[in-house]
Amino acid sequence: MVVRALFTLLMAVFLAFSYEIKLRKVDKDIYMVRGEDALPSLKNGGFISNAFAVYTEEGWVVIDTLSTPELSEKFLKELLKVKKAPVKYTIITHYHPDHWYGAKTFKDAKAKMVAHKKLKELYDSGEAKAILEEANRSFNGLYDSVVLVPPDIVVEDKVRLKAGSRTFDIISMTPAHTNSDIVVYMPDRKVLFAGDLVYYKRIPFMGDRNASSKGWEEVLRRIKSMDIKLILGGHNEPMDKKAIDYTLGYITYLRENIRMMKQEGKFIDEIKQALSDSPYKKDAMYQEFHNANIFRVDMELDLEP
Ligand SMILES: [Zn+2]
Image (cartoon, rainbow, N blue to C red):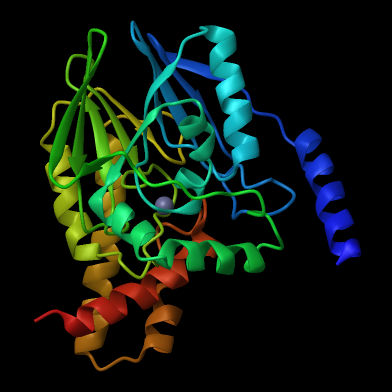
């Protein structure tokens, strides 16, 4: 027990110095921190996702909160260096750890938290806590300091928020990457914060138990019809609309090939083998996510008419 406590303390000290969070300006009044393209580990401190903030006359609007309170505290500190202003809203794009688990920092800073209704249901049912504990075991105590917090404002379909002269349309886009995905659209700026729905040269993760590849295709077509000049995602560098075609291309490639092979009577291992060599194999996170995606789509197609 003492050994574990000591280890955790040493690890925390080590982590506090081992990674750096650099704030970058991406557009007028819009800032980001850029996480590594990797799975979470003690070494990267869970800094594997992006977070964003928009400065308005009424204070900061934060989109996503990174994986731990340590990371989000650093993020907030960097924002306050740019402008000492309150955080008015914090918007969580979906329930995954690398987007939600740092949220307490902003709750403590009196920000109103916004998320999908399904995230609140996950929290209220106690399931989110069980998932956190399981993840903490799997990642050797990476999430020891995480305290889950629920949203104050819940999104079912669409919510419009104003902060100063800025408008933020928060739109439900489910089911897709999870059943709790939302995007944040700034109509006057034509900027879309896309969470984990849009990627470029990076494999989307479709292995969540609530993911829907079919729903994701529909969501991407909806996003494609929007007037967008800049896409800010949970894991890439800033993107433009060609990233939507990339993501849609990968999902459709998997669905069409897997459907065809199933019709030919092929089993999952043969399908995996056949798709191990694909046009996407040089892209980021291929090793980590591609097979899990094949499994998921295979299962989904079994249930589709
Ligand atoms: Zn995610």
